[in-house]
Length: 490
Ligand SMILES: CC(=O)N[C@H]1[C@@H](OP(=O)(O)OP(=O)(O)OC[C@H]2O[C@@H](n3ccc(=O)[nH]c3=O)[C@H](O)[C@@H]2O)O[C@H](CO)[C@@H](O)[C@@H]1O[C@H](C)C(=O)N[C@@H](C)C(=O)N[C@H](CCC(=O)O)C(=O)O
Ligand SMILES: Nc1ncnc2c1ncn2[C@@H]1O[C@H](COP(=O)(O)OP(=O)(O)OP(=O)(O)O)[C@@H](O)[C@H]1O
Ligand SMILES: N[C@H](CCC[C@H](N)C(=O)O)C(=O)O
Ligand SMILES: [Mg+2]
Image 1 (cartoon, helix red, strand yellow):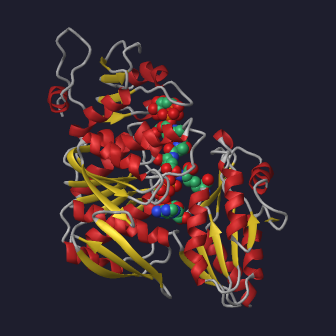
Image 2 (cartoon, protein in one colour; image 1 turned 90 degrees about the horizontal axis):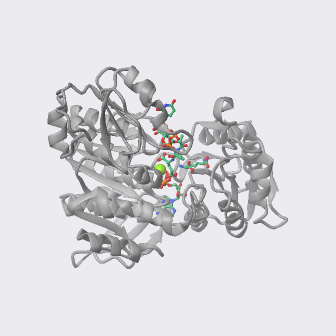
Image 3 (cartoon, rainbow, N blue to C red; image 1 turned 90 degrees about the vertical axis):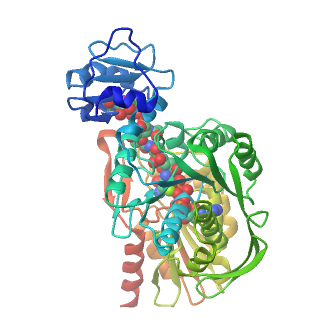
């Protein structure tokens, strides 16, 4: 694509007074090692590196233009300058990757993003659309899931994924907008029809200085990313919901609220049943009953927000609510992994924050007649303050809590466990080896008990070490739970 075409589509021009050769742009990269002749290179100041240091190498490799801070030194290529170069890069790259699927929605919040985008995808599919979701689980279509590594990959990968989905005929995409992704402008450019806010609670305070700053990062979704005239779907029952609605109102977005306090989908009642729950809701003045085949208040919340996104983007009301009874479990979210020889079900859940752990235990509690046994840990090189909080929540909510390792990364696993245990009473157990911890829980479980293995969900490995010394040891909670339950049965 010609640079002049890109520039006029994006409404930007390079910082040069000289006439510019109308070069052909062949691609976009934010890593100089991915630059090929004709690439536009985004040079960003990051946490570990200053991308500007790689400008000469990028030009050497054939970059025709550099998007960077006005102070950056660019010699031998055009300089697109902006104090927020990541934003400018997204704007410039978007027309290059067009067309993208016509209906895009994005979900933010501390917990529930992956679940909500995946449930939205399922509802769209049942509504007859070719739909996909992008997030922690990867890029998911009806045919397959392709992992990307990060929840919101870099902007060039994100836009390339969208363009690829459009080529496959996908028309509807729901994607996760993590606070990292939002604050690094990794997920924007195309028109986003609706955004959703699920909740806010403690996480990532290693990256964001305060909860207010963390919230502000998330609110870029309503402040800037959702298109003019788009819809904000807000879970209304969270402590931060009113503030989220305020952002949507200030921006002039159409507001669609969901929950017990919701005005558009009002949750009137919720009754757990054997393998799911009965939801009583009100929408547009009409009462409805939904038999949701997923357990727990948190899954009801995510499913209703997903329905809100589908309705906000033109979904048929009766068909959408009807489809909710055919939703299937999201991988690693209250996923039933095994039944122990004593008859106790073992669930795997991705809870890795205090609030999520509380929600996951609350989901299972109505189904427990004996003890709730919880195995969990906290990740290394991540927010340390959440560790004792997670310990406290598990101590209060579980009948037996076993603290184990969950991706120690560059930290000493014993030190991480000690920080978790600092929030717990003397009854807490500590078994560092995750396989042994799961084995202990499975062996302890009697009839009427339930085992919850929290923290890793769908993850396929235990991350040990960091930098050049990082190793990922294959580990899947679901598989290990089955092996442990099976070995006891023999
Ligand atoms: C803290 C964080 O989010 N870091 C991400 C971010 O790094 P950064 O911008 O600070 O980049 P940097 O590594 O300092 O490098 C600066 C620039 O130099 C470039 N570079 C660097 C080296 C080189 O040789 N050549 C080169 O061009 C880099 O591409 C980058 O543009 O951009 C990088 C490139 O896309 C990511 O790899 C990196 O993810 C790291 C690995 C990471 O662990 N991120 C996690 C925390 C994350 O983003 N998680 C969220 C989920 C959170 C949640 O909701 O729970 C996610 O969305 O996945
Ligand atoms: N609406 C919710 N309210 C409270 N807890 C939730 C909610 N949704 C999910 N959770 C908890 O959070 C865990 C992670 O859920 P999910 O993967 O959907 O969230 P996420 O926002 O994508 O997380 P991440 O930021 O790690 O990508 C679940 O396994 C569950 O324990
Ligand atoms: N997106 C989350 C995933 C955490 C998963 C948990 N298993 C851990 O490693 O802490 C993060 O990067 O903080
Ligand atoms: Mg996620």
